[in-house]
Amino acid sequence: MRALKTAILSAALALGIAGAAQASEGVHIPKQSWPHAGIFGTVDKAAAQRGFQIYKEVCSACHSMRLVPIRTLAGIGFTEDELKGIAAGYEMQAGPNDAGEMFKRPGVPADRFPSPFPNDQAARASNNGALPPDLSLMAKARVGGEDYIYAFLTGFEEPPADVKLMDGMNYNKVFPGHQVGMPNILQPDGVTYADGTKATVEQEAHDVATFLTFVAEPHLDARKQMGVKVILFLLVLAGLMYATKRKLWSTLH
Image 1 (cartoon, rainbow, N blue to C red):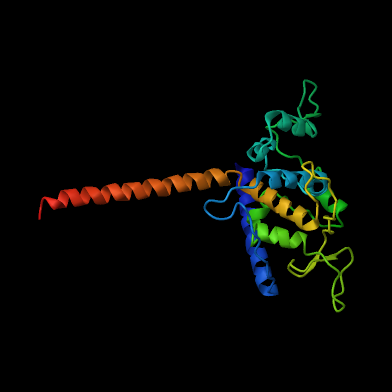
Image 2 (cartoon, rainbow, N blue to C red):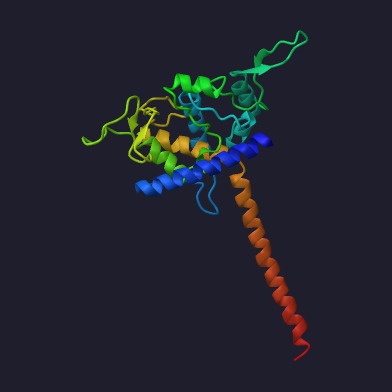
């Protein structure tokens, strides 16, 4: 619980910093069309599964999702056997054993996604001093949410002639300051989707943004469904109360 509170506070701080930076830079984040938008919207499970494929094959080399249990993927349609297979592909540190030693074991669905690095210092050392952010709450920690993620992933381009990049930096037109240590990781046909979808950069970015929106709020669909039920209940209750009021006051006229 303490780790979750710390992560939420960190996400809120990142949200404020990113918001202020974007405002000062005048960065425009275009709006995209998302199936999960609106009161009746639901998460596109096929897109989220493709987004997980990209995370696993591309993003997980640098970025962690240490707040997300593997079993959360059941919410986008993975079966229990598929979850066990996904979890078993990770090695988890466990122990100590009877000899007091830590050891490695295959993952289980209840485990959280492991970090690609043993600690933050190792992550910085492998990324020219930059710490790749954890993606668990990224869709909530950036102004614009999934729109920002999509714009960022499709925003890499050659820098203008009057812009000099610092060593190890890459130009991104929507990132505050426009210089970012992360390279352009999405390429046309950079992955082969299991469902046969054409892997354009735009499609890949859309799928990653959908997946990160889901992991940041895995109960989004259930919350919306409950909200609709509550609104319907209140409407019916208001009608009944009005009819009751009319009935009671009619005897006084």
